[in-house]
Image (cartoon, rainbow, N blue to C red; front, side, top):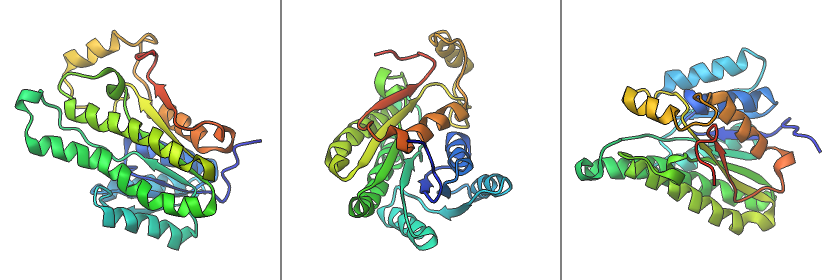
Amino acid sequence: MKNDFTDRVAIVTGSSRGIGRAIAETLAARGTQVVVNCAKDLEGAEETVDNIVSKGNIATVFQADVSELSEAEGLINYALDKYGNLDILVNNAGTTRDQLLMRMSEEEWDLVLRVNLKSTFNCCKTAVKLMMRKRYGRIVNISSVSAIAGNPGQTNYAASKSGMIGFSKSLARETASRKITVNVVAPGFIPTTLTDDLPDELKEKTLSHIPLGRWGEPQEVAEAVVFLAGETAGYITGQVLNVDGGMVMA
């Protein structure tokens, strides 16, 4: 058995930059036809596609705010109309609004839960109907080690990412009989635009708790996702794979 992605079709939400871009580019490099998704950063999403196409691989952009069910449905339908199929769904769309709970606004709580968790529900609800009919699918949801260990100032973020883990385990049980796997990748500290605003003091403190003694790279997360999306991971479902340099050890 080998990981042959030829003729596979994937959607990667939130893939205009950072981890999402690395996942989209890595899947495409293995032969997958990729739908690059963004909510707002169309220029970044088009750059991701340009990077993929310049290497002779296949990708297109579909702009949609997947925290809205109708737009998530539009994204899935686009993949079907464009490529006639959907094999792999990677839910990577996410945002942060870090704040201590006593200072956190209701809007900051609601936004993070909507973008991170509800978008996962929206995309999975729509994609699973197709995957159940075809009796095949790979779903990989991008959570965070914050969901496992917690992080001060991130009650909203940690709640949304913890929700993704419980959601994924439950969905894995619902879909296993149809050969659909649902897994989670939980990155540790991976410098991206989402981490740029963190205080230097917090970054250094975080680094001191990483046994491997360095930050991670988006490509390292992408490789974990591609493994779980492939044929050789067909006996793995309902699992959480931490890509964190040993920061969180169960």
